[in-house]
Image 1 (cartoon, one colour):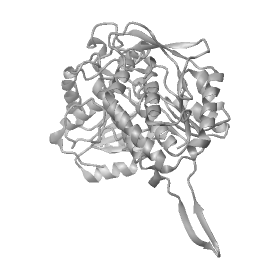
Image 2: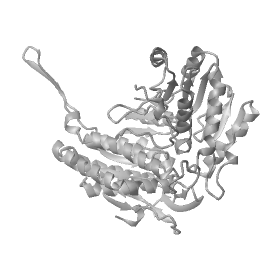
Image 3: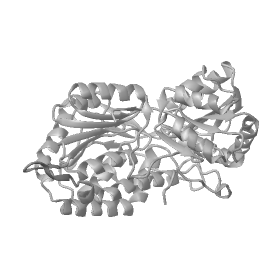
Length: 490
């Protein structure tokens, strides 16, 4: 392992330089530009990440292009063997990866481990690539003519990934792409880039040929270089909606396949017949887990009828029990936000909501821990209306809004009229209403008494409307509890 990608030491004082991974080795940046990397819990810069120039992105693409011919010719059985070794190494080093995530992103260590576990599930799914790549065959489609289809790799493909899941989202991209025979260029978030280098070393250790996986760091210069490069066949992106739209339009204009996932404003509808304690547990868990920095977080509850008062009271009672602090501490449930600027932006919505007529039930600025970290405690806004900024915008922080309506139809209309369409949930004891909601709602992922309906590895992840460009269970209320951890499938 190289020093640049080793798990961070909690009391580390020196700034580390974080460079690119091209052709199977660390390559220091030559652009003369870099960006700061922080430990959000301490509010202190711990590293500097090199920003790639156009020429450096091209170097990574050329390394991937040179590796493609040999990699696509590797047999499926050998490819599978490499993926089993990748799976084993990621599993063995999941603690190391999680500590890197907590040190640079700020999420609590248990949540970081959950992120790695969900990424690992996709790697495990890709271990079955021989079955997944089967084609089709039709004998005698016409007289004396047989027809068959085969699945072939595209070539060099790229991923541009967000700060909130610096291990999982890249795994969701590079694992299927590489398993299918493509080579990959990753442009991770510049806010928490070290995990990508650590994983690159694991892939090399597993036997992945040099050049098949490459990492370039940077800002818009690197993003544009990826989108405009003629040798990149496809791009996958996760981030905000304005940038997702830009990535989709820029990439497709140049003939690339593009899937670009944008922002979200996920609503959770609570009907009067719902188990209020269960709904409150779910709302608290889904709103404040990972400090609300999840594209599938519940940021808006829609309380129907007399559910409103009971639900707000139940949520309020749970908030003082949430411990906010350094994610490395084992009893902490919610860590800091990723940067000071983002923390301040999220906090501004509290005063904005009050000025626009909402009730501030809990103000996170009054409950966050002392120190220089980028902390904000949990906030709860009641009587939020659709005209307010706190309702319209993706806040992406630990701020939960409650909107009150009289009927199911009003709640459904609010969800369907929202420009985002990532995820939604309904809490009710009525199976018929739940089924009707699933049928009527215009959202990509729907949970029935499940607040964060993230699909398992063998189903696609995708929202509707402005949440995507390009491409049920009945739990026992007795098991309900507040759990800000990452949603698990095992």
